[in-house]
Length: 350
Image (tube, rainbow, N blue to C red; front, side):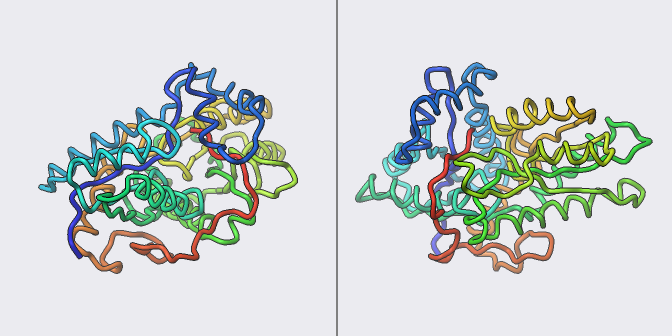
């Protein structure tokens, strides 16, 4: 297999000022017939953050860190950045890549898991953008899902240990992992939920020895649900889970947003604002663990570089870094995997 001559960090995108919010949400929901007044209502969440999503700045930091790490490893590859829904748009980045003469590109998306919106939709975005660029557009492959890579799991363990030390040592807290909910019809056609449960199990498996073998109670809850109430989504919602735990006399909870790689709007609003308010209401002391790509964590950056190197070197799947019981994700997804949902739904907020 010929080598790659560029790397593409591919993300969701987010507004960078108050005037960007509604146009950004219009891009996110294009073709779904969502009224503008509903977009304005959802956009009010951004007011809490002066209309700025942190995701773009976090992507800039990841891009710089990955570029530096690749150079440190002797890999002379430029790292580009493009978004699905906001500037820099993917098609514009691919035009830049084409103009620079790059022919084979490896894309790393800002999601660790497999689902339609986390994987297949990005493949569709790449195909559409390459078609728009036209003749001369590079060949773009996508790196594998990395939910079980030690460079993803270990930083979460480190940060969770730090969170545990900030709580009352006389009471073992409950760990609640969270991820973006998706319609149950979508969940039934992909490995998203199984991968999340495996990642959570891996974190707990590494946490318990640091607690002198004490067993931790943990749960997986969901957040950021959108769309009509008639469409079933994965449950329980994090706020309902907190109320249920409080009713069972739980008084300390560590939230681990394991479904996300960076602290963007869904983490900040849904957890630091809404879930924090629910916890206060029901008498739970709540600590939230940061995500590994926010600063980003050095092990996370090293992992991204390894994802590039394993493809450059043609490393067999069985020789690639991975933890747990599930198989390492393939280099190329089957055409039938993670299909589009049967019903449209409002998308993520970043």
